[in-house]
Length: 385
Ligand code: DP6
Image 1 (cartoon, helix red, strand yellow):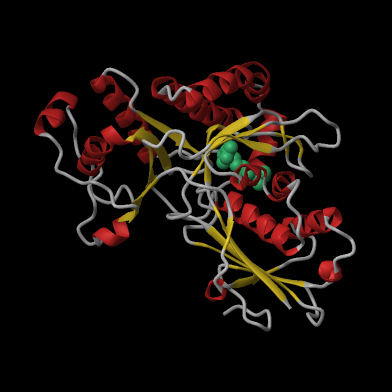
Image 2 (cartoon, rainbow, N blue to C red):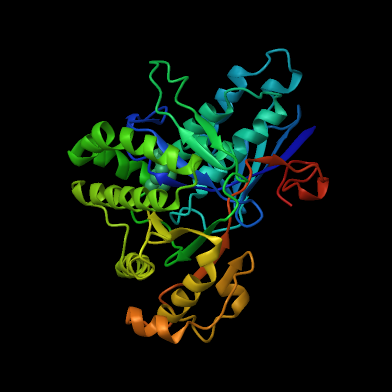
């Protein structure tokens, strides 16, 4: 019996991946760039177990058994096996896989990215495969290839017909820009209305904007964003991040039938970020939204306390939600909002409860193995604990 447990991070794109050239292999129509978030706050955890006596392959996600055969999980297992050393005795044994996220699944919070990255990383350890893990994770879920690395990551769409070069690579470590902070404003953590895999395909077939974006907009933005990250130019970083999020959601609207991921609370957050940036006279906060209404805000440490005081004033915490449930992740500095700011920005509070909770985090490292046997999610018999 062999067993390996790993954790892997979430990543949040600042140049979005949206649209596939090859839906089977998840080859994107454009490059993308993301920040990998710290596993101290959000992570997927996976245990892979194998034994010569295991009768069939089994897979559990967040405590519930799922179908294994014919799924993307299965495809990732096949890919890892096909690239591993054929002489490994356990290469053909059945597998038990148990995975869980410590944050809501499929709520537009990049859970599939963390989940597949974790699975592939753990399988790589089980089958002693180190190379090509990013392209295998991509087969599970496109954005997962970026979660194979920490810090700032570029996923190049690739040029080869074999798709071997559609892989992610780190462009700067999480320590490169140590003041970078991330707030996730959770508006709704229910399952997505439009799963991104299907919505993306609809965009490719029905939107003309998406093709213009892939050809004429993204190549230029990738260069600018890469430079903004390397030179730690937050103004430029923020402007491109927000424009790119807006263009992605414009494509969602240009998709026929359209898919709406942003709601009125998301729009209120967008307005507030622009109002704050105007008040400061420069871009100090950047929003970005994935396939859901939840906002991911990038900012530098010096504005965190002030901007948090504004968020908490405009979107009050409901009286019946305990601080520990509402403020999650790292300890968020909190102080009452400055009255002059309320006056100058003409801030008006909404009714309490527009935000479900707030996650405060930073950038962090890529996947890692957990050596402590207490971390395993499966027993010695390959069943969930
Ligand atoms: C909006 O990676 O979830 O988060 O490849 O079909 O699994 P599949 O899609 P997925 O798409 C994520 C899209 C996005 C933008 C991004 O992360 O770049």
